[in-house]
Amino acid sequence: FGNGINPQLLGEEPGLFALEFIPDDVSPMLRSFIFNAESGTVTLSFSEPVDFTTFVYSGFHFQGKSNSTTQYTLTGGSVESTSSYILTITLTNTDLNALRALSYVKSISDTYLSVDFGAFQDVALHPNPLVPIPKTAALQVSQYINETSSPFITSFILDLNQNALILTFSETIVTSSLDLSALTLMDNSTAPITSVTLSGGIASPLIPTPYYGTRMIYVNLTQPDITSIKVSHTLAISIYTTYLKASAGLVRNTAGLISVADTIMASQVIYDTTRASLVSFSLDMNTGYMLLTFDDVLSVPPFIPSGIALQNSKLSSKNKMYTLTDSSFAFNTSGFVMTVKIGPVDLFNLQLTPGVAVSLNTTYITMSADAFDDVYGVDVTAITNDGTALRASKFIPDTTPPRLVSFDLNMNYSVLILRFSKAVNVSTLKVQDLVLYSGANTSAAIALYQLHSGTVVQGEDGQTVSIYLTTSDSNMLKNLTSLATSVNNSYLDIASNDIQDLVGYNLTVAASSRLAIQCTVYTPDTTLPVLVSFDLDMNVGWINMTFSETIFGGSFNATMISLQNKRVISKLARVYTLLSSIPLRYSSPIISVRLSADDTNAIKLLQELAIDAETAYITITP
Image (tube, rainbow, N blue to C red; front, side, top):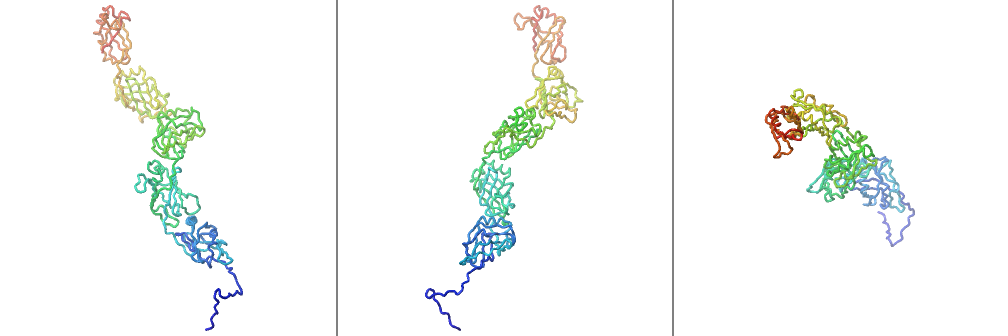
């Protein structure tokens, strides 16, 4: 069996020198690696022991295939050694999330590693550098461990200044998979008074990236959603009244895992401190509606009409601009778009302002800061008449012809009141063409009267026109017993060319030209007639009395007349009341009475009565 070796004890006998020494000059090689997408670690297996302290992270590059120019280079991490042959790298969150955001490094088939020369060394006395793995022949992963954790929102910021939501997730997610309707903002995490479920929005990475996914998402909120948020008196007042509820399935990560449901409080609320600015406006001269679009949510009230002026250019003189009055009002409660209804008075005066709001190129707006407020009471940005007036984005000209809406007849004051659908040009009114009928069917009416003239007065809104009848026309109408005595026999016929609007459109009339419009309000004559003057002719025996208006002849009795020789009756006055004289029986402002022989002789016998103008006075006792 042979002889054994003579032992040489350590430290007791001198050691032997090597006859020949060959140092380690073999470079280590990376044999294989495991990628754990869940834990964020990379386990490297080498051909020989390596010195982990020599590890250079920037020398390691992930790529999607063995030969590729597209790579991701590590930026850092920590190394832990389970043995000198095996190193485990714990990736930084930055690198892990960046790798998760890539379209590759998702499975064994698209996970490769290339390594630079000098990325690490072995443990030899004279260290040997790694055998490099070029990007043209990258090493494929030997084992790929998939993610198992679902993503969730770790924090969020509500930015009311930019009308945006900033979401931070626990890991990289696919932006295109985000379902914004799964998000609800609430003022309380358990029993909210106000909640706003997002109706949509535009989601994009907070920081633009060429990668497949991202951890931070910037959401531009929709106008309806931001309106609901800002008008609330309980939501988003502070971080303690700002919660975000995310339903399950909000988003998926780059591994395809669906997010879980969660509710968290805002980490920050950025308040709105920026003044709202007018972005555009449109004007419809047919309806008088003006739509003002702002870049933020406004609230009405308040609305100051005098804060808005329309003018014909960016820089206009005072006679080329019109400032609204209290005739106009805004009726939106809140939102990005304010609707201003230009009142009839303003619309009339705007059309009278030469050269303003007649086309798109003559419609500009200026606005004072106090014209509107946002929901926080902050004034809007003023637009001044210094060459920066804003031109309308849309202009609809007035193309609607006027209509006669209704008319009233006041026989007490002899006024015909016409009401049109819009402002009219009274200088074009043909009073002499207006005809009053006793019925709607003009061809079958039993009575009619065509006006001759009158005094025309236009109302401040331009839509109401009052025609004060001449005394002659008034008395003639009052003389007709079957016309203009009530609403039932008061109809007006007006032709299309009898009046025009301010643009020049003729009146729109009924389809049948034989139909007249019925009076809406009729005011009868309730004013007692007044005797204005009288003539007395004792030669022929006539008394001619002129009254302030038409007297119905059938109602007048001569026995109501008394003649006296003094203005004021006294004991010495001579007075005679007619007994048998007869008035002419027709209706007129002038009533004539034929004195009977008995009455004439009786007057003459009273020698001091009616002997001249100074002794002839008359009284009428109904």
